[in-house]
Image (cartoon, rainbow, N blue to C red; front, side, top):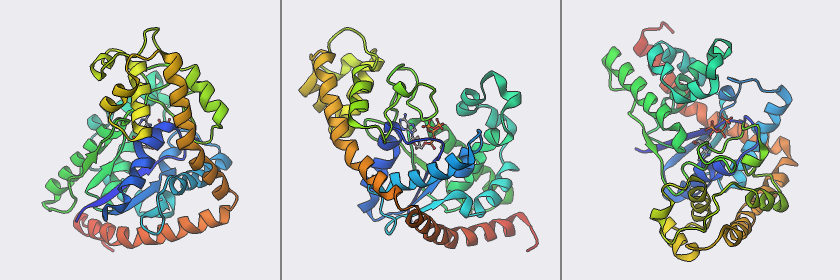
Length: 332
Ligand code: AQP
């Protein structure tokens, strides 16, 4: 039976990239009847330094972001990674299955560790093995993610296949990444070759889910573009990364295809298109951000939701971990 798993790091405020690439899609797919498990991956977040108080707040705010985006904690399992210790336990086993060479090829590792790999944490290097544990602990078959996480889901498949092969079992499923829609890779507003990211030092590069209407409008007005008006058809966007990014955002927010958007806005100068985009972004994001703010007034309620979610997650995870230990030959 299909089962969906996906996670988001509480490593800062949520961005429009997280919303379009992840949260909105989670909410949209919720009524398909498939069992869905969504995780605040706080153990992933600490692979780079996090201030303890900020981590707590970001974890609760992320949970509020899931709910405000339409993920229902009754229908989906919504929990915090470190509250389910089986993640760390299975990750250790996968650290012993994954190969150093596989990990070294991960582009996220190369980007985040950069030239200073000697100073990066061991956890940052092992990040994809923990992610494989997150997914396979639930025998998840489908992982909805943005384009940037595709390589990690492929590594998860390699880990599952190697485990199954080495131990001569058909135990872990070979998971499919699900990368769909017009906004699987929302780009920085300042640089069309970089993805929009929570951890970009420039706040102007991203739209935060908690930005107010004036801030959103100002960021879109100042977004980098070329001087030409929009092309008349989608094909004309192929070598114009910044223009394409804004059109993709418009398409995803308005739930239209890029072709349909181009039929509406093709040929317009940015001075006309940007205010349309800003108005749409404010209309779509402001109900979500005000609901997040409302939920954040009751942190105890958020903690209770996460506690219930972690109990439900453990009911699925514990037997799968126990079986894994048995396969590996660990005396219990
Ligand atoms: N720019 C993006 N476009 C589309 N999807 C995106 N996602 C992130 N950025 C974009 C998707 O959001 C989910 C959660 O991502 P994450 O927070 O766990 O890690 P990340 O991909 O590393 O996100 P950030 O914002 O760049 O965080 P930092 O800066 O802390 O590393 C994933 O499904 C991701 O694909």
